[in-house]
Structures are given as structure tokens and as C-alpha cells.
Length: 205
Image 1 (cartoon, rainbow, N blue to C red):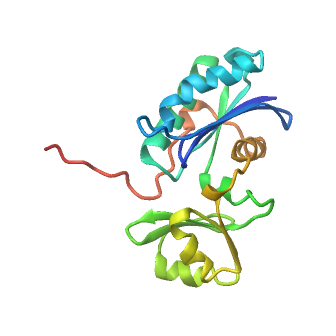
Image 2: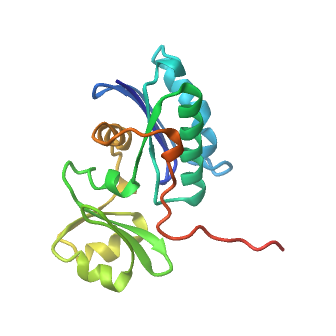
């Protein structure tokens, strides 16, 4: 099965095209300082498909990160996934960024990501929610943890081991595609963003 997987929820955009566990093409994009990386999602999907000698009609499943992460990024990738799947009449799979990150060291690590407001998103085999940092300090003791740059020092002080996913070149697209194969595909209408905390509301000036 040819799977097109992509993510704009985290600190970069990555797109991976795979078939039966083999990567056919992959690209990663960082923000260029002028445009957020999700702005390049559709053009990069086209490039990945073209480089593999394929067209959108060859894709059999869309896999995407549904969050948590950047609110703009979550909206971008879930919207693009829904549109692609609808137009191609294929199914989708949504995977949490927390589950993806738990696999970056080849095992099932605890994940702790900055949720702001003195909280962290915590994953430990399942999503535990946005938890106060003081409670997180106790939860990570003796654990192997994947975190982000902003919390790495704090988590490292209490955990058995800790790494920041932002500091390494991890195969996130491959992990997303592999996890997607383990889940039940669904109609594009059922693909929803995962907002553990409500999106910010901005008042008009």
C-alpha cells in the first residue's frame, strides 16, 4: 500500500511517501523566517510524488499528525489530508504527535511537550492530558523521556534519560507511516484535529 504521510504540527514539515514499509521519497522543511513551514506543504507533496514518478492517484492512504502542536500546523495538515482524501476517494489515518515521538528511540518512551501556561502534554502509552509542570517533575522520575528544547533541562534533572526531538534528525515520517499501518483507516470526514487545550481566541482590535 502506498501511504502519503505528512506533518506540520511540530517544529518542521515532513512529508514521506512509503510502500509496504519502504520509503519511496521524503522531504523535511524548516521555517525560513518569513513563511511558516506549513506554507510549503502542498508544493512539497507534489515534489515528493513527482520525484517518485507517481501522481496523487497512486496514493492509497493519507496519514497525518493530528496534534498536539502548533494550532496553525494542526489545522494545515488535517485540512490538507481531508481535501486530498476526499478528492482521491481514499481513507485517512490520524496519529498523535505524542505517539509518534514516543517511538523515536525505537521503544515506547514517555513524552513530555511544552503546553505553555506552566503545563506539559504528557503521553505514557496513552495521552494523559495537559499536566502542571510540578506534577510532571514527579511523573518523569526514573523514566526515559522524549521532550522538546524548552523543557529538556527541567526534564533531564528528574528523568532517567531525556532527549529533545528537536535536537536530532529522527525519521518522524517513517514512524508516522508505520503507525498508520497499525490503525484502522477511516473516511476523511472522521479525521479531526486533536486539541488537548482549546485553541487561542484572539479579540479584534
